Image (cartoon, rainbow, N blue to C red; front, side, top):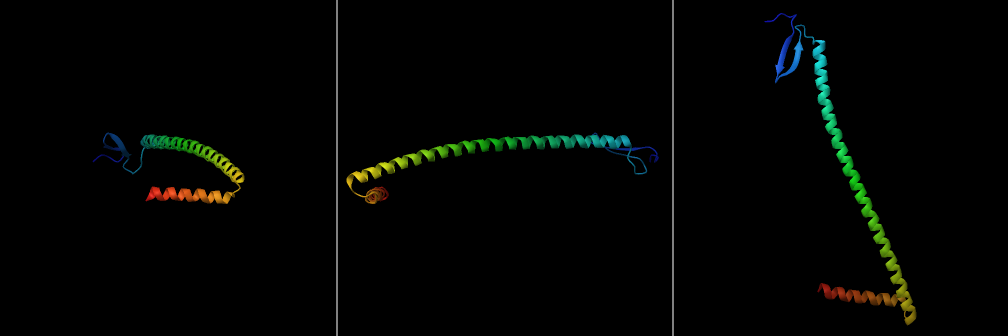
Length: 123
């Protein structure tokens, strides 16, 4: 059994686990070595987490840009559809005025024709 004044070295897989004096105290150099080893491990873990967050942030930014572009395209499409419907309604009203039949009658006629086509198509 070694004397208590000499440090005890315990090694596991080639790394220093602890360097204990017989009185249960750690030497200053061993504490610094363990602290630097711990800091290196924590730094590498933190670095990997930061890179994962960076990749996630980039993916979120790409998704936002794509969604924004799609929303702009949909807005343009809806605006074009609104303009076309407005023009169609104006032409239908003009046609109704020329024939002397009210626009409600023409609208009912077009709905009836559409229902006839839908009935033929479904059955």
